[in-house]
Image (cartoon, rainbow, N blue to C red; front, top):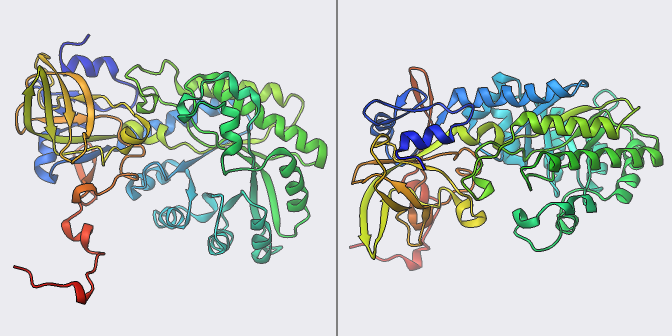
Length: 460
């Protein structure tokens, strides 16, 4: 067991991290002292490391390109973290965009990404959304037959609408894996069959025929998104095999062979709170890329290889953001220790909804010996347990705590419970610390509220 925060960080470090303690024990992130950042931008504070995003993207793309000879396209899933600065960094790196809903689509466009580089998902897309996607030249992953007629009305011979058909993969091959990740006692195949997304094989065969017969639509291939349900590379291989098998069966019935297979996102990371445990994932992205490529090569033997599309989110940004908080009251009673900080689980809602497990570091005392076991808790009126039973040095008011891996599904799912405004986010790079999201104020929280005149009373 590590004896200090510095030793713990050394033990859990993964590629892409830019975290290191000073000689005096202060954690540095992206080359900046944590206390300097919080002094300048306030607490609590999300800090995003630009170099980590770039390194993660390059590693992800390189892993799949090394194993798949027919070409790879990467589309960042902005649902994971919708900071426009992060989207702009990934624009520079060459990533396309995956969007779910009109707000994400608009944000992706406003980050500077051309519409032609965007894939649009959704199981109930509005007509306005479809028309805009067609006008901008985006690819639509069709998820309902009604979309075909809408897109056909706006398509032209000069500007056909590119589409994929989203498939529902739910074979018993998935049932060799534990369904605990889905918080269900049912088999994974049952959980996937009940999901609202995608078309079963019989439905897909009918829709492929219809799409191909519709003037103005260009069917590229198929998409799916099972998401992370296991960190075993074989789980990703099963998704790939099922996708390839579906393509073969649809070809037998329709004669259509895909130019594109879009395997979606959910790619596991080395240090992953979603695993609900502190243990590191022993598998790197190269393992998943090799497993997927091998499965596809085997299943598609003798066929022209489609281009591979991928929609990562968590892998690109998960460890790129750290949440820093300031210690307030430290309470000891009944042989227990509670370290209160000014951040709460309303900022890390997957602790509450999915039992995510985050590593916590004593950011201002990284070299002090661990001397107690403490619960790191937030100020809201629920238990707000950010990190339970963690080894910590003796912490006091004004010390700092860092929660790692908060780049995915933190800010986008956060809320304003108890009237707590959400923190700022700062982008760090060598010699630079730039605000990319401002801190919410009281006016932000209550500015949309109104009191009817009949209910107004004079304020004291």
